[in-house]
Image 1: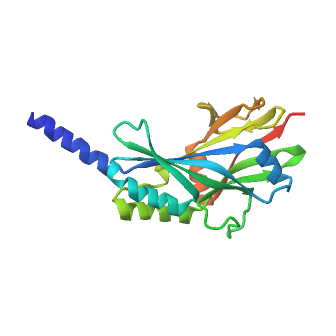
Image 2: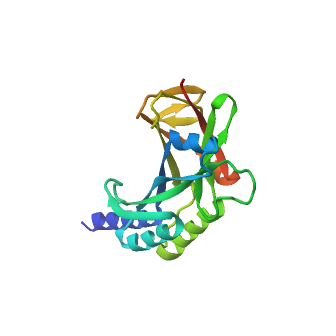
Image 3: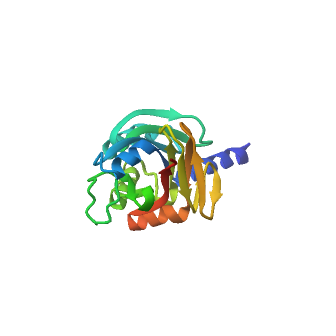
Length: 225
């Protein structure tokens, strides 16, 4: 019995030492992409959900305050299911959808991330992520200071859901990402019919590149005539 109790205590200590993990699930609508790349809108905002897994519920209040102070339009903080030994918390936020800006001064201000778009030839619109690395690291530090939990770039992941809200099919050009859980090491074209969606997860290489360089392109899309 003492050995079992000692093992449980050790497991609890290890869980606390492992820190936490985070994911951002972002929605990107095709019509929004076209409006921005065609200049009909200077920028737009889309919905994203921040998902955090913590080893204890006791830090929920601090987490809610940190997320509310770090993202636009933060609301609907709630506890989710799953997570195993960890507690999963979610919060809905707003993320800018803007044209890609390679300059060091980010036109989107203090936002921690943005969905970036880049017009290409023949009606293609490239899409990707822009990350405010300094701002994200500031959030990591605040989390550590207030909860004694640790989070770094390796614990952060992204999921981008592209949703076809047009009345026509859309071609999605992808490479080096996961699409609906399937790895795409080589260039591949997917077709989204009306009201269909594809879930894209960047590889670790793409995530780390965005974190170090501030931006990464993940693919391109084009309406099918």
